[in-house]
Each structure stands twice: as C-alpha cells, then as structure tokens.
Length: 594
Image (cartoon, rainbow, N blue to C red; front, side):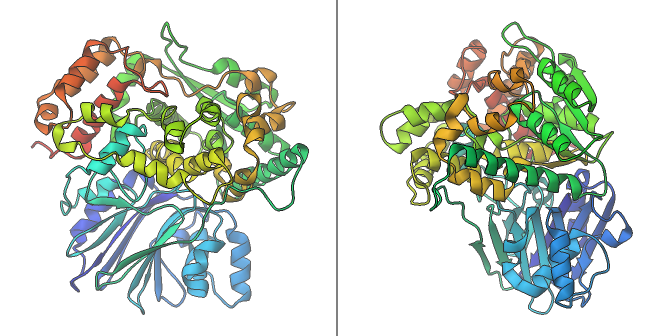
C-alpha cells in the first residue's frame, strides 16, 4: 500500500525533476517507509512506500524487472501473488524479491495487457516499457485503489490523489458542472472518469489505460460484473453455504498475505463483527480490534460500544476503544478534510480519520466491513425501491437522490445550472441487459460505481492519511461475482443482508444481528448546533465563498436559518454538505495566501 505518481512527456523532453519532488510531497502520507523516483527519457515514475510485503530493501520502488526493460510503481496488494510467482518462475522469469510488485511486472512481461485479468486484489499501478515507449496503467476491478490523471499539451500526469496533480501548477481548477451535479445529487459520489474539476480525471475501475509519447491515450475495460442467476438453480441453503465459503476465503487471503500484523476495525455492526468471527474460525488467535465513539446528542447516541464490546469479549480480542470529545472533532476537522482526495459528505469520514490515527500506532494493516451493505442489500432504501412502482429512474431517485434536479438548480448559482446529468447517469446504468431485474441492476450500479466513490474512497483516504492499509473482504471480486448472481430476495430477507445474517447466526451475538442498521455515528455533524454551526456558517459566509459564487445565496441563507431542518432522503445534513464542499475547495483548490 503506497502512494504513486508519474508523468510522460508529449514533446520529447524530460520531466522536470521539480515536479517529481512536488508530487512526491503530496502523496507522502500514503507511504512513510521509503521513497524513490525513476527517469527514463520522456517518463518519470515516483513512489512513496508503506512496507507490507517483503519489508527488505528489495521491495523498493520504482522497481525494474530483471531485463531492465520494464519499470513499475504500484499501490495495493495482490492476494494471489504467491501462486502467480510460482507460475512465472516455471515459465523462466527471474525474481530478486518476494514482493507482489515484482510479480506484477513479470506478469506484464509475460502476458502483456491481459496480466490484469490474472491479478486478484486491490491495485493501481503504472508500467513503463522502455522498448516500446509505452506507459501502461491499471486499476483494480472494484476501484479500491485510486488512480487520478490529467492531460496537458505537454504531457500526461498521474497520481494517487488530485492534490499531487494540482500542486504542479499545470492544471486548471475550474469546476466541472457535470461533476458538481453528481456531487450534490449522489451524496458526494462523482463516478469515474469525472471529478469535481474539469482538468482532473480518474481511471475507471476494471479498466487499463495506455499512453504513448505521441499523446495517444486509450483505455479498455477488462472485467464486467453480471447480475444474473446461474444456469443451475441453487437452494437457499446452498447459497448461504457458498457465500460463507467465498467470504471465508476472502478473509483468509487478507490475513495471510502480509508480513505485518493485521487488525479489524470493529464498528459494532454486523459486517465487522462477522469478520472477527470468521478470523477466529480461520484459526487466528491474537485478533486485534479497534472501535471509536463520540459524544451523544439528544437525538442520537455517539458510540456503538454496547455492540462491539460483546463481540470483542466473545472472541477474546486485544480490543482498544477510543472516545473522542466534540471539541477534538472540531479541532481535527481541518486535518480530515485535508486528507480528502475529493469532497466527502459522509460524516464518518472524520471518524475514520481519527480512528486510523490511533490504529496506526498498533498495526499497519486492518480489515474493514465496507461494501457489505451494497453487495448484500443492507440499506433501508433497497426494499423501498424494490416495492416501488414506475420507471427505473423514479424508483431509484425517489429513495436515493439528495437533491432532485429542480433543487440542485436552486442550490447552485445560475452558471452551474443545466441538464439533469445525474438522471442520465442513473438511466444508463439501470437500463442494462447485464442484470436480471431492477434490483439486480441497482445493486450492480451501487457495487461497481457508487460504492467506489463513497465508502471505499473514504476508507482509503482516511486510513492512508496515517500510513494504514485497509483491506475490504466484502469487495473481493470473486465474492462480489457470486453475490451478484444470488437472488435479491435472499439479500432482502430479515430487513436486509439476509444471507449474511444467516451466516452470522450463532457466530456473533443475536443483539448485533437483529439491531437496526447502524453507522459510524458522529451526531454533531448531523444535528448542527453550537461551535459546529458556527464553523459551517463562517465557512459559507466567508469572503472566499462569496467570491467563488458556487452557491445560490438565498438557498444557503435558508439552510443557515434552519440548520436542523434540511435533510436528504438518506438523512444527511444539507448544511453540512454545503459547508464541507466549500471548505474542501478552500483547502485544496484556492491559491495559498503568502
């Protein structure tokens, strides 16, 4: 797990080394253990390392293959790298290390573009072929690892976050109206390849890209998720057993493929609790678990220790709890926003940031339950969509969209109003022949597109801000493929995640299984009052906000006048959404005052 960056010149010149230094500094938090840069004619590759596999100097990047034809920078973990390594050795390829990085570079030498189809894991990497003068980049199937890029007349630049690209000063910070529409309609999800900024793009999950010095840039999909029933029908019991077995394999792989201890982020919910149970079932005896809580508000509790404690006790984990006072949350909020590659509305982003800080003092790798709700229909809105009537757009939007198009136009200044880009995106994904029915299509859309730029990105950013690698077994692509073919009725049972609840019964306390769906709670960012209200008001009323002119001031004034009255369909605070977006722009886009 690391930070990567690089560039390829289009005019034949070498990349300015100053850009390498600038970009390296902006991804440094992702890799505190080592750094390196590589220059070869028109190409520059850079790396900041978090050492997880092969902790020796032999794992240093950028890495060259034995022939020195190929150079690679890689962020992620390949869970089947030992098997691939043996296969490649049998084919005559030589290895100097025991790292998964060297497996990727030899796999590319052996199978070319098709190497990505053999990789099982989370990854973003770039390989330079010095003979063919070709830059090859790829992103994992589920988009767990980030890969941003930007183009200019002079060259192609890429990095693990947009800040590394913006820091070069080569790219515009103009807002993309389509990205803005998605940002405010899909609770901060801007599906790849777009971002909030016109100049910055991101590689789509399950795609690879090829770039050449003559400015030719192409991309191609290498994996597609089908949400269709298998040819041979399966009973409910067979589905439950198959999913248990697949999940167990995913958990085991994410435990054994590491040369450092692996912990679990234990939220008190079903998903992380089940991970602890399966780790114990797999024979892990010294499980390390971590939980975080915040101050209560009258409307909502700020911690879930009553659910996480019994799980830790049942499996005798080495358990650590952290209770964060509101004063600390507000003080640390700027740091958390600074760690966001893109603006994130989820209130648990700050929770993950503060939890990751503490966890990183004990371990370098954790397993986390992200993705389970999307893969196994755990959220309350899926059942409502399934029961609704009408066309696919109405069935989805009426239970999901933060702002209908009319409200979006009321939210932003006139310059950003236009077509209903989000409606077009939804219809494109839900009117598909790659799903058997409406809910299959919804879950497929969520798993392949929406989850990537909400919980998955959030966890990656906040853990990597502290040099902590998060692994997400519920997004193992083999498990996802199996779950996508499972009948929606089994997932919707027991008020959502029915098949996981069947697996969990007897393994974790019934109180955890049967409780209402919970989240990482941070009530102060939902029920806005006191110092939190003042922070948001100051942000939105600031001179920088007014000069930017992004929002319709009448709309903002209404939110500020009634800070606890304006919520999205998914119970998010519209005031927090607006303030967070403006504050992110102030931190990441506005020029620094000297």
